[in-house]
Image (cartoon, rainbow, N blue to C red; front, side, top):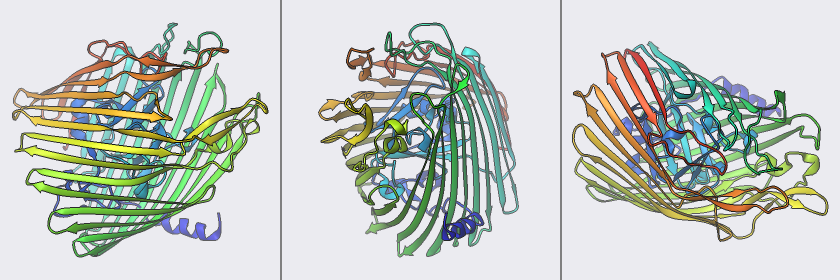
Length: 634
């Protein structure tokens, strides 16, 4: 690290990070911070947006975020077994590492696991809100945001002291407990939480009887200082310590998962520190942020540590937001340094390696208005990368009210996904040939949507989208002459297109119904891509009882048929298989014994559906849970 970078690090570490102030004329629940470089009202956003609130989490009693994402239009969840098993999320048919996950605005995709996010360890106790923006967002957020972003916003301190704690237990010896609290002292706010979720799980392979257990402990600290004038400071810290057992594939006899003594131990740490200078509503605001993350993924086989991967990322950013009449111009500079490390025993090859990558970015964005109603947003980003060629990405969106309750929106943008460290250097570098011509994956996406309201009771949304991906990377190209492997860009385009629909109907003051549907066509080289259902959807019925003291929720998720690849034992070639469609139904209820005490219960997979997300891996059957919650101060 040169002297200039050291100086920048020292300066930024002495300052801090914060979400910018929301527009004063918009309710907070109608503002999002993920669709642009500055907060933006949902009504001014040209992209398809879904917001999952704390109330949504509590009414569904969801313990994993992926339990909620399965009902988001355009999202497909693939879990390789029971709770705690590897979980992937694909958006609009893109790859699992084409969606960027942010935690309070900080990048959380793991460079040590192919730039994918570890969804299986993301629990909900400390989450206040989840913002989802679909479509290419690389012009705003850079690499990995090729198909969309998911921003996890954690709970922070309240204006009054609060304590919120619950205990839950149920099937498969599951035990979940969490406690969170917040307080305010003058201009300071402080929020803290700890959650632990453990389960014996079940047998994730089709044969055998071994249960694959898992546990995850998450701790978070949020602190902020706001002078109420021209200066605010925020600090976030989040740590995850998780363990899960899983079954490896028997490639010799069956090509299917079989009972195995293998496990993964993961730790994740995210920290963010920042400063916002400039009074709310002023014509000029400055933001300086510093974020740091490190992850460690330790693999064990028969109790002995195998190949493990680690990463750390340090990033700094400066942004100026300039008010120009009713418009806003944002100018930003970012620098990010990432280190990837792999260690393990030397056997068939030597996995030990250390690799580095830096990227410096310049971003410009303009939020504009045409007249009193039309909102538009233009963004451009230039990335100077230390490993491969530089890149320019852009995005344009517009929101156009056609009538009092009718809104037309459209957006177009380019996306980019840089090659992963393994695609660049291989799992065993001595058995891998670096491809100097390897190009980043690039996409162009378009969407147009319409939203129609009917009074306060019914709201309908429709979105048509199309995205073309070029330079898709095949991470394992084998040379039978040299017996070495490399990574290469595939010929042609991968094409994704479809329709997303959503409806919310407030039937009465006590009954609400939500429904979604997604139609997806996703092909690579004219072949349907795996683990992407053509049809998917959901249905959600929310009913208040006992004068609002009780709540019943019935939620059903549909996953249509999808293909997968079966890697048959040698010498048979890989085969394409079809996974059956399924309905997952959950029923949950909650009742307030008093103003401070709730009791709750939930049954997952109520119909005991037998289904697979990934070929050969069992998923959980019917399960029941119950618990009690105590709240003070809210």
